Image (cartoon, rainbow, N blue to C red; front, side, top):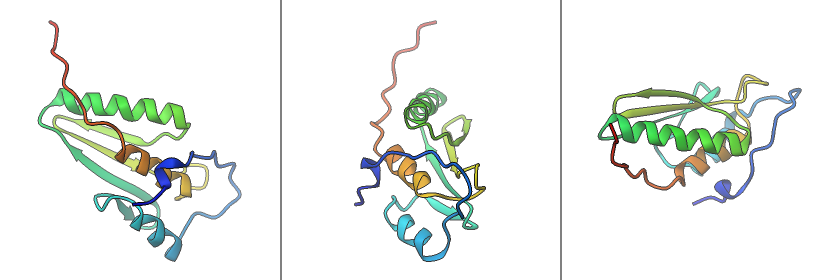
Amino acid sequence: MSDLAQRQCVACKGGVPPLAGDELTRLARELQAAWRVVNEHHLEREFKFPNFLQALQFTNRVGELAEAQNHHPDIYLAWGKVKLTLWTHKIDGLTESDFVFAAKVDQLPAVQVAPMVI
């Protein structure tokens, strides 16, 4: 596998072109196959869970990672699934940091369900 997850996301200041073509293909090959490059504009991946609680816990872990990396995905949370969409808003396209973040998401520990207290 790649070393993308070992890198840090770097804030984009704009003024650079988004990645395209061969560079996108190369970086996509370094991610788990479930990630998709969509229209050379953004990355998407959907995660499935057996219930809402595990999906929510995963969402919270992604949120903590996003804050630590200062790189924030769009997150769709529903019963039993979470969909992440990544791109660099400043340039309206993909940068290496989007791939770094995706690789870091893939290394998040498995979600453990804590007993609910009502």
